[in-house]
Structure formats: structure tokens, C-alpha cells
Length: 212
Image (cartoon, rainbow, N blue to C red; front, side, top):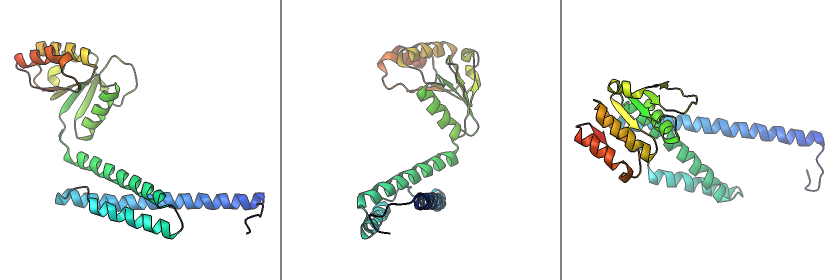
């Protein structure tokens, strides 16, 4: 087909169908690659090997770039694709490692502020590593976790309490926890500690287990 040939509607349709087939094949190959990566990741987990192998990553990328350039493609395209695949593979291996660690061992965790952005992340993480997670939050949104309306009444039901609210409300919650003296470990996720200093000191003085 010459470069100045105008495609008919039927020819264009066939080319698009061929593109669809190629795209499907690419996705199938990515899935096959991920299955192989998962098997390798399980081996690393069993043997205690590090997840990252920087020399191997460089070999994969360099080989892909060379292959692309030999086919008349830009090496940068192959580099970007392979870096994305490697990043995705490492992320999956890290997640699998966390799940297998099962740190929570069925213990109960309460995330106060569990429906905010950081609270949702923390709830999912704790669930992933084996905790039975409940959340307490004034926000009325859907959540896969059990909601607790009056967290103050049930603090001693939990092995772990996470304070995942903004800084100043965190201080008030810590002050209240110091009065309630929960038996489980309490920790906050605040990036700055000065707004919570009073609450943290109160927790310490009351003999609570606090991590900040």
C-alpha cells in the first residue's frame, strides 16, 4: 500500500481491528509477565532475598532500549514502558510481602478519623497486614470497615488505636485518651508534634502506651 493511498472505510476498519488485536496481545503479555514476576517474588520472600535487584533492572531496561532502537523506535519509549512495568512489579511484590507478614494476627484496631484521606490509607494498610479494623469518624460516607459511633465507650476493646485526624483535634483526642487510659497501643500520624504536645505529655503522664 503506497504512502499516498487513501484508505477506504473497509481498510481503515481492518487496521483498527488489527490495532485492537495488538493491544489485547500487549495486555496479555503484561499479565503473563506479572505472573512470572509473582513467582519470582514468592521465591524471594521464602529465601529472604531482597526484592530489588538494581543490576538486573538495568539489564532489562538496557536490553529493551537496544531492541527498540534496532526496530527503528525511540529508546526512550521502551525505557519508559519498562520502568513502569518494573515499578508496578515491585509495588505488587511489596504488597504481597506485607500481606504475608500478617503483623496484626487478628488483633483489633480502631482508626479515629478513619474516613479522611490518611485515615482511609491507614485503615486499608492495617487491614492488609491482618488487623480487624473499625473506624470512628463524623463523616458520613461509605466504608468497607465497621463504624463505631461512640469510640470513647469502647477504647479498651482494641489492641491498637490510631489517631488520624488534623493536628489540633488530635491533641483533644489524645487528652481524652489520657483520661480513658486505654490498654492498647496508641499512635498518631501527625507530621508536626508541637500542636499535640499537651496531649502527648498527658498520655505519657497517665501511663498510656503511646507512639508518635
